[in-house]
Length: 201
Image: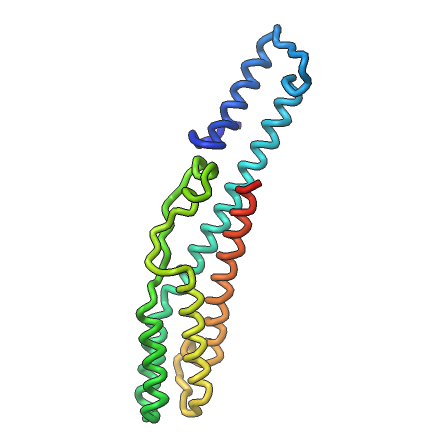
């Protein structure tokens, strides 16, 4: 199997593969130490390759989770703006409407995404390098934004006149959407923890 990466652990595994191919064709290779014999080196290669592929799989799972979360949050700000527009025509008391607008401002000010820098296998040698990110806001941003949406929905629950005809703005669907946002961040945290745990082994 030829590895496509040329740095870090992947390069080491690829070089070990080349070494095995070379000594296999060298008839005089007959070390006295068991660990240097071809079966032992082949087993080492197989284990290293499996470990490397496992890290790559977990990294891809984390990237997919991040991507799915970004997609879910993509419509959040416009959705909340539409909620506020629905509330604006209900002649609510100033106190309730101001609470809603305050929560809207918090959500609108939140930064949408965390952009991750593409990494290669060399990054597995350095956990700090692997976690390089250009962050537009803190790690808590997604959690706080979902919680602010939850507070807005709790406020809407006490507004009996809130009953939009638009399907995605109905309270039951908004609650489902809010739960999906929370689960998306949980999935990112889970896959990130699994990746970090695997790279330390």
